Length: 234
Image (cartoon, rainbow, N blue to C red; front, side, top):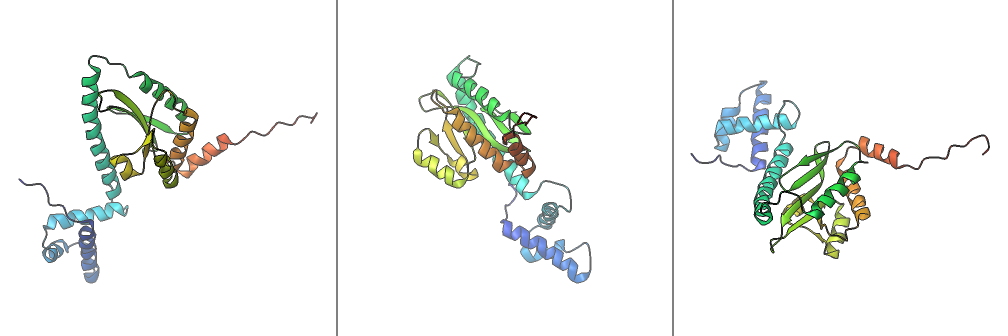
């Protein structure tokens, strides 16, 4: 049995709107699926699914929105890449089960950085871990194997576009890849000379881009300088 045919998003939206228009013109709350399917030369079940998805995206019915599905698909692709990289890492590391030293240092440093950020969660994966706020990834720590067979650790985050371009212009230790380009991230190679104060600023900035306003306001309040308590002798 062949895989389901993929239709362009424009056709899906058009088909769903045609069903709604068909019903509105006749004062009905159902029907029109078969008629629209015949006009578009597609299977009626496809049109039915397009209409359901439109209702989900509009919040009329429960389910995964188109944006949620795209995000899940992106994460699944990244997971496949991480699994392949993990197999290479296992082969290179042999029987050693401990994290490479720089990876352990990076994890300790990142835990300290995110400890002051409100409502952060850490999610483990095959190559390292994600740092999330309200289910949105704002940083990723991962260890892979370089072409020489050596484990290397890097940290990825999402800066604003101007900062991203400036860091990429610097070059080493900053870099990007196809996946990072797609989601607007940048990565830094973790080394013994890594400036963790600078990394803390980058990670906090990425957190601010992902977090809801309520949490960024909470962070701002915590960062605000405390006024001096004036006693009677002031």
